[in-house]
Image (cartoon, rainbow, N blue to C red; front, side, top):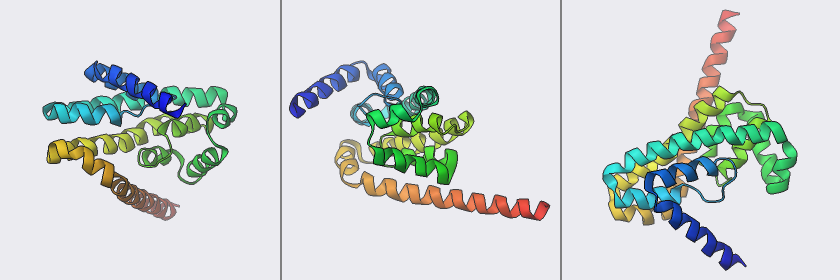
Length: 199
């Protein structure tokens, strides 16, 4: 059963890859709300095959992913927690809710660098009634950093990029999350300090 599902997903991935940038854009949009195939599996081969277009591909996947996030937001806003617990583990849903309670819309920036599917965050953002502009802003930051980082690695390593990303990208993303989180906490601290001075 698992092997059949894997073969089915591989076949769909190859089908979308055959359409190049259009296939990448569609997968990126759908993956942000419900689709099981992540855009990286199309972005990386396309970028390695055409490194001169890899930054363009990174832009396409970023914009499409953020657009798809708004569909996920709508699903969460309209259907709420019941749809979350039906398709995702209760533990995963609770963890994402904790992110939003702690960091608000900034959680969308973290989302692109966690093992938790991005669609969980987009649906949860609507469920938690995060402001749309925050979802868009932080999604651009998080998804953009992820995809452009992959694009730059391809420009740097060429065909060896795939093996490098498979082995080290997890560690790299954790480092990026740490830097973004520290920057955000510094921003919050400075903002609160200024507000106290003006009171």
